[in-house]
Image (cartoon, helix red, strand yellow):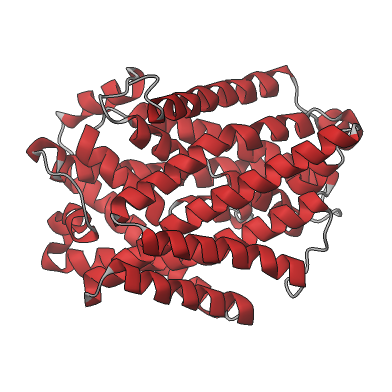
Length: 408
C-alpha cells in the first residue's frame, strides 16, 4: 500500500500518452491490421519503461532536468551548440506535430457532438488552450478532463473483455511473437511507437520526480519507489492501448471497415454503451485532446528552457514564447489538415522519427560519472537502451526512405 501511495510521476507519463493520438492510432491499428502490430505495442511499452526509468534516475540522483544535463554533457563548444540545437529542434518540432494531433483529436470530438467542420473546432480549441495557458486557469479543469480520460479508458478495457473470444488469443500471441509489418502499414507501426514512447515525457519525468522525491529522501528508496511507479503506470497504459486495438479489431478488421472519423471509432464501444457510444467516445476524445493540448506546449517550454539555460519561469517572456509557438503551429497545422484521422496518424509518426535523436542524447547523459556517480548506466542499461535506439532508428529510417520511394 505504501508503494501505491507513492504513485505519481509515472501516472503523469501514462496519462500523457493516453491522448487522442493513442486512441486514434490504436483504433486504426486494430481496424487495418487486426492484431498483427501488437509486437510494436509490446516494444513501445518495453522501450518506455527503459527510457523513463533512466530519465527518473537522472532527475533523482543529479537533481537536474534532462535539458540541463545535456547542456553540460559535452566539452567541445561546437558539439555542445549542435547537440542543444538538435534537442531544441527535435522537441519543438516533435511537440508541434504532437500538438497537431491533440488539437485535431479534441476538434474531432466536438465535431461528432455538435457538427460544424473540424477546422472550425480546431481554431476554437487552439484559442481555448492559449487562454487557459496564459491565465493559468487550466489547473482548475485539468482534474475533470483527466477524470474523463480515465473513465473512457476503463470503458475500453471492459468492452475489450466483452468482445474478445477464445479464438482471438492465438491471433494476439501471433501478433506479439511473430513481428511483421503488413503491406502499407509502416506509417501506422511507427505511429504506434511514436504515440507511446513520447520524447517530451523524458523531459517531464526528470523534472517531476524531483518534486515527488525531495533531496531528504534516501536515494536508494526514491529510486526503488520511482521504478515501481514507472513500471506499473506504463504497463497500465499499455493495457489500455491493447484494449483499444482489440475493440477496433473486433469491430472493424473482420468486416474490412476503414476508419475515417470519430463516429466510426465510437462503434468499438457499442457492445457496452449502445447508442450512447458515439457521444461518450467524442467527449472522451475532446477531454484527452484538450488535456494534452495544454501539457505538450508546457513540456516543450520546460525542455527548451533547460537546454538553453533559461529560467524556467511560467510567467517569463521566453518561456511563454516557446509554448505559444508550439500551440500556434499545432493549431495552424490542425486547421490545414484535410483528413483528421490521417493528420493525427502523421503527427504520431513524426514523433517516432524524432525519437532516436532524444534517446541518443539521453544515453550520453546517463553515462556521465561526474553527474550520476555509481548510479550511471551499467552494461545492461546501455544494451537495453541501445536496443531501443537501434529499433527506433531503423523504423524511422525505413519510413523516411519509403517516403522518398527508395523502399516500399
